[in-house]
Length: 118
Image (cartoon, rainbow, N blue to C red; front, side, top):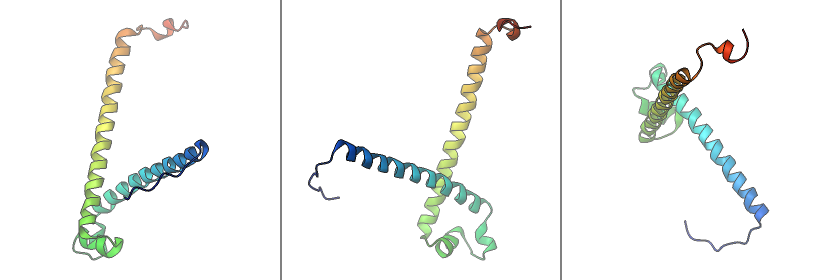
């Protein structure tokens, strides 16, 4: 991208533009999540077979109008997203387990008495 001369911008305009960029970034994130979920579902259910294509790549070229290499990149992206989800879920479960152990060790055994109720 060629360096363009700086155009003076007010603080308000800079914040407006930044907000618009931030909103677009969020839209892209959301779209990528939806795309990866749909790609995983289509691949797992072997939609290309039902539609008469010999492969995922042929299906993607014919139905999605993307190249074979892009079709397989989409699968890679979907696999990466799934791996991230699995790690995040596992890590969250591990954190909850550790917290539960820590809380259990520090908390009184009779919660109703500790709360002042019977």
